[in-house]
Amino acid sequence: VSNMVAKLAKTCALRISPDKLNFILSDKLAGGGASLWCELQQEDFFSEFQMEGVSADNNEIYLELTSENLARALKTAQNARALKVKLTNRHFPCLTVSVELISVSSSSRIVTHDIPIKVIPRRLWRDFREPCIPDSDVSIYLPVLKTMRSVVEKMKNISNHLVIEANLNGELNLKIETELVCVTTHFRDLGNPPLASENASQDRSPDQMAEVQIDIRKLLQLLAGQQVNPTRALCNIVHNRIVHFDLLHEDVSLQYFIPALS
Amino acid sequence: MPLLTQRIQDESVQYSLVASLDNVRNLSTILKAIHFREHATCFATKNGIRVTVENAKCVQANAFIQAGIFQEFIVQEESITFRINLTVLLDCLSIFGSSPTPGTLTALRMCYQGYGHPLMLFLEEGGVVTVCKINTQEPEDTLDFDFCSTNVINKIILQSEGLREAFSELDMTSEVLQITMSPDKPYFRLSTFGNAGSSHLDYPKDSDLMETFLCNQTQVNRYKISLLKPSTKALVLSCKVSIRTDNRGFLSLQYMIKNEDGQICFVEYYCCPDEEVCESEY
Image (tube, rainbow over all chains, first blue to last red; front, side, top):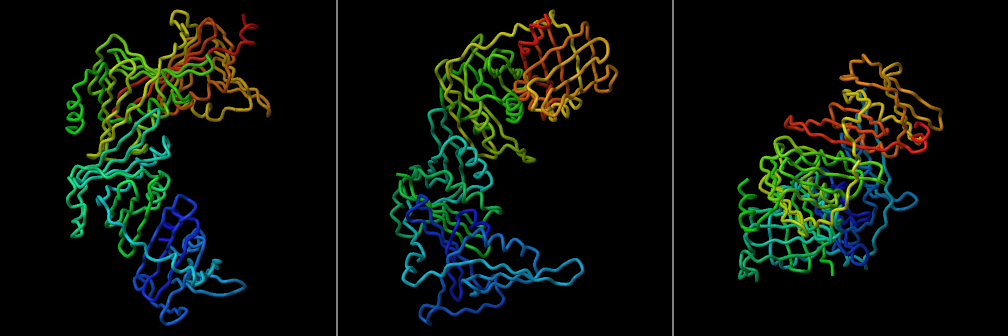
């Protein structure tokens, strides 16, 4: 997971609450405003979990860390027997990851990484609230991400912008257009999820496309981080405003928002 | 490919060139072998397509893709010429990924309406269709090296592996590559003159790698290494290479390339000799 997050953002916020862990990136100013909300259920990952927030009402901790550091620390943990994550305060606040590794001679070693963090004060917490999911014009299941990734990779060589469009007929198109060349990839028969009740988009004709022009690198970042195909991948488009990707792995949910280029 | 054909029929346009291919890699690999400049000129006749790339008016690479390589190949006019951005063309051809995935082939249909129109590519893999419209440009005159087989003085055909290592390890600090071909010793010699000294590489006439050895006269010619280096791309793909020089010292390298379906294509590099030596030779 952390690897996936590291591909998407340099620094991210980590929200710890008794039952959930969230990686959050809300890039409001710089970077074109793509944002990320990644949620992990605490009990799926940890056998033992203890935490104490600021108060009983606000039993949460918000941290800011460099995601690459965490990804690197957890890389050693791939074949580990046990992993402990602690919040510590050595000379500065740290997230301590201690990994118990088994060597060939079956004696165990413990590797400890201290990742410097910044604790986010409470007055800034509201910047990190769970994003509200916009009412989309079209919602569609994504094709196999590997195919999509190689297409987007090649398109990136040619252009910086990409138009993603989809309709309620299971069709999704990726388009780029430059002076030299115009490339469109058509995906079909993807299927649309059943609509959430009284959504306005019901009176939409199935063939009508909703489209968003986005920064191609932002999309590639998301696709590059997806090494395994998620169990469910959904793309929601709000015409000319935003595209929202909702990826569900077994125990991780990832929401990624890319706003339209003006 | 019902999807593809259907799409084409929808547009009742008369194309002057239509070519389809079940495995796009048969085309893209060959084009990669000559991709050392951004732009290429394409000539199509009923026999096939020739794609030409040139640099500095000194070197020219030609890729020949015979009509037989394509599953469908229709040319309405005597000959069709257009110039195209090769980098973009290659990106489009490999849009579904450049490394082969077992069990999946990308099919291609290529259409061109004629002068002033874009080149249309329809690619399909596993039900996903990509349509590319690449703008074409005014064709430029290509060089005529006037390399005539009657003027060929020396000719060697080698197994490519014999040359591959030599080319990949060429001393790039040397400005030139000197090629010696001779009916007597050293028969066939590649020499470089770099910062770290000069090196010579000799191939004996009766080497296993040597397929044909027809040398009539001793010739020593120098060629700019920077001009020859791009041909390594073709060398890597090829199984045999024919090295010829004519009476003016012009060099022709012909690479025989077998594609994934066992068909044979040719890529040819022409290079003119480095002038100074040229004059002293005559």
